[in-house]
Each structure stands twice: as structure tokens, then as C-alpha cells.
Length: 480
Image (cartoon, rainbow, N blue to C red; front, side, top):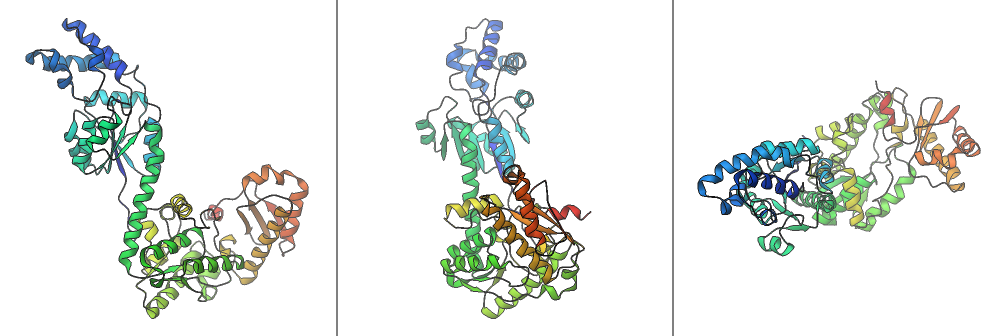
């Protein structure tokens, strides 16, 4: 069964963290003072916003007057402090960064909750839950209840709340507290403002997930990595070597007609550079009726064959697990029967279990100086054959030769090509290339003609350039 990583939950303070409340707060205090006949030192009282209203008002009113003054302040607040208060630069982007990592957002503030909600609604702040009238360590109850692992604030008391919840404290300098004060209070991170938060969060999430991956692999004792040479399986292989040592990792590449010849030597070189033994067992998916028939579940039969072959090797060689390079994006990408087949046969998915996305795999690969960090996606040759058309060695061979021919034509014309697919639609071929090439070099009729000739030379009777350009998994569009 595939595991689900814990969902990222980030809490944010409101005043002077997400929004610049000071002007509106001053206006509300001024209006309150006028009603009460009290000359509040407004600038002083708004210099370090964050503490609850009773703490702000108590030094200037009698004990009995504080509670009624709080009630009146809250009633005056909407007219003086909603439409005039802006979000800080980077506020919306900070919330969007949490969403980009699949996370949820909490607003945990000392402000009266209905008034906090008015700010959320007016500014369109993308939050899941608003908790108000909580201050300092009192914020910890909400953070713990909602499972927040990060709390972002501007005040030393926000740091206290984060610590009490066991969350990472991220502080911004848009409030009244200085860097030195925040660090002395024990904050883990200080940012100038929220514009710096998305980049910090990206690195933090990547570090967290890499740590989870390393711990998972280390606990596995030994693994056979189903290694295609692509970015995901190459990264998994490198991560396994880091966690276990090369002697407890075996790389296994299934050789069959569906694996392009051009992929084989680079994959071998990469494994050798890691000091990992590579084996290349022959797989026999071409003998499976369900694979050759090429219905929508073709990948199920391929992955079942591969996983069973590698499982036998793992048992014979004394390795505890077979691991695939399935990542977190793969698990939510829709129709993926191959993932189901591998799971049914006990394969583990360390990248998925750690929550690592395709983009994070590439970012970590670049961090580790792996040559595969920017390698184009390289699905098997059978993925180029339209569903319902039988997969045969002949078809796969002509697809590979046609793609090589198109690449030669484009590179010979000085057009660098990254992603390229020749889709076999029967007698007709559909050629997908990077969309930018269609508007650039391939706007030329002569180069388009040369591409078409290269494809026709391999036995197709028709060949056209897809005007939409390369799209991973485009043949899935035909399943309906």
C-alpha cells in the first residue's frame, strides 16, 4: 500500500506579519480616544503591535474601563481599519508557496476573530482556518491541534507560541521587534519580509523530505533499485548509495525492445560513477498478451513483469527490497496502472513516501551535482504507440529510428531539441517537439518538410507535426 506523507501545515500571524495594520490601528485608537475623552499616545501604542488589546489599553485606562473600551474598539475597528489596511509585499505569494507544496494555511492571531476574518475577506487571503484572540504561548494550542509544523510571525511572543507548539519559528522584521530581539527569543529563522518566505520554504520542504528519504532508505537495510536511467530512478539510486553504501544497493535495468538503445550506455556510466553494481536482466513483456494488446492498462503488465523479475533477483542476491522511482507527482497524475502493479508485488516507493515531487527530485539532483538533474523525460518506447495498436518490436524500432532521424535534422539546422516524441498512430506518425521550436525554427516550411521526410523514411505513410508541441502522456487523451 502506498503511504501518504504528512500534509504541510503553516501558521501565520496577522498584524504586522501578513498585513500592515498600524495606520488603521492608529485611526481606530484615535476614534476611541475621542469618544472616551482620552488622549492616547497613539504612536507609542502602535509601535510594536501584537500584544492583546487589554495589554495595550490597560496602562491608559482605569481597570473598570478596559473591558468596555475593548468592546468599543472592536466595534469601531471595521469602519477604520479594514479598507485602509494593505497586505505586506509578499503576503499572497507566501500563502501561495504553502499551497504549491500541497499545504494548508492557518491564521493564528491575537486579533478578535470576526475582525481578522474581515481582513481575510477584504484582501483575499488564502487561508483555511482563522483562530483569533490567542496570544503568546496560547497560540500553541491551535498550532498543535491543527498539526502546524511552522509558525510565521513578527513578535517575540510569536516565537514563544511556535516553541510551545514544537513548531519552527520563522520571524519577519516588518513588526517592531529587531533581529537581535527575535534571535534572543529563540526564533529559528529571521527574514526581512515575506518576499523571502517562498524561497526559504522551498529549501525547508526539500531538506525535510530529503531527510525523510534518507531515514527511510537507511531503515531498509538493502535495496534493488528499478533503474531506467531517468532522472527519478537515477536520483533514487544516488540517495540509496548515500544512505546505505554502494555494497548494499543493486541497480537493475530491464532490457527489452521498449528501452531505447541511446539510454543504455549513459545509465551504465552513471551507475559506475556511483560505484554500484548494475545488472541488466532481460524482461519479457512482449510475451504478455495484455502488453502486446496495448489497451489502456499496458503499463500494468510491463511493471508487473519487471517487478517480478527484480523480486526474484533480490531474493537470490540477498537484498531486502525492490524500490521504484515513483514520485509524489506520479501518484496524483491520474491513470497510472504501472504504479498499481508494482505496489501489488511489494515494491517500495521511497520518493513518494518522502513526498518528493518531480521538481524536487530535479532540485536535489542539481544540489548533488548529478548529471541527470535536467535530463528530459524518457518514457519507454511503447508509450509512443497509440492505445489499441499492437506493440511489436518492429513498431518500437521504427519509432526509435524516426526520433533519432528527427533529432539529427533539427540539430543539423542548429535547433536544439529537448523533448521529442514520435507517436505511432498506426500508419500515421504525430511528431511532438518543444513548443518553442514550432514558433521558431520549425516555422520554416523547409525544415518542417525535412522532419517529415525523416519520419516517412522509417516506414510511416503519413507524418505531421503536432501544433500543440510536446505533452507528456498525450496519448492518454485518447483513452476516452
